[in-house]
Amino acid sequence: MSVAERYVELCLRLVRHDDELLDYYYGPKEIAERVEREPLSEPSELAAEARSLAEESDSAYLRAQLRGVELVARKLGDEAISYVDEVEGSYMTSAERIPEERFEEAHRMLDELLPPGGTLAERYRRWEDGDPIPAEKLEPVLQSVAERLRETTHDGFGLPDGEAFELALVNGKHWYAFNDYRGGLRSRVEVNTDLPVNAGSIVALMAHELYPGHHTEQTWKEHVLYDHGHLEESVLVYGTPQSVVSEGIAVLAVDIAKEQHGEALAEAFAEHGVRYDADEARLIRPAARTIADAVANAALLVHLDGASADEANAYLQRWELASEERADQHVRFVTDRWGAAYIRTYTDGYELCRNWVGGDPARFKRLLTEQLTPADLQ
Image (spheres, rainbow, N blue to C red):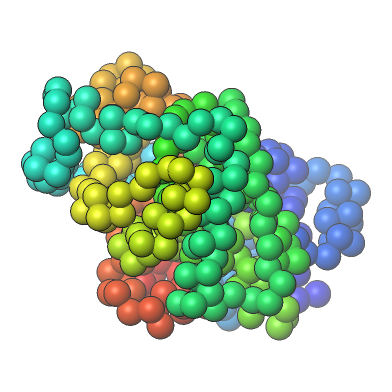
């Protein structure tokens, strides 16, 4: 049995302890069925197996993944692992605080760009949450924007023939949207309607989850890697460095959409009588992206400094300019068992991918099609 197949089995054994660890699996059903029939493995056994496989593998990508799998197994076995060690062990990044001077500079930029009227936080919340799409229009608008981004992504980076997606509106989640990749070049994207969804957030969600974000990456890697013998591509578990690259791609995808495709997006919204100011979105995006990183600092406040959920909420209202409701959603994420460390995949993954791509479309295409680790991008 190949190292790749044993890796897939190991990941599937891991998620039997906690199915929330599984992002996706679209590999052979017989492997999943075989693992399901086995007695449940002890986490310590899984950690030892991860170490053993890493020693056998000649793939830097698999060795990095197995390092993360080992740490997740140790955590499942109730081993005490510090927050810093979890971030470094799972995601190959460092849990460094983001200087608040960056947020201050972003606040100054927003103060110049946002329409007047009220405090900076009030003005930003109007921009972020204002003019929500009416419920009856939400799904068709999401569909239109996704289709327009699909066209621009096809023109810029190509798409595998036959890829497709479906949309679903949900609620009661701690995330904004989720891509359930099902293999066969198919995704189901769920959008959380608990918070207001306006034109700007629709662009961010559809770019992040679909084009040129998660769906684009996963379909390309299925087509280029899995279909050519890389069985390991069929499974992704949280707590592994692949997520750093994947989330970095998806956050960078929003930059690409807002910076390069604003006119096409405005046309898609106009079809439904919805206004989208492409120039405003492009100008505000860098500062909005910067203050979003305050969530990573909130995680450090909780897990290193012992701050309460209320204190973390207040921190996000101050620096992220978040509403109390949006801050509460973020605090729930960074206090989740697996979300706490995962938050670094967005901040660190974005920085790694943005710097490595450097505005070169050919490099972004490489992110979509190659097995790259955070170490490769540093």
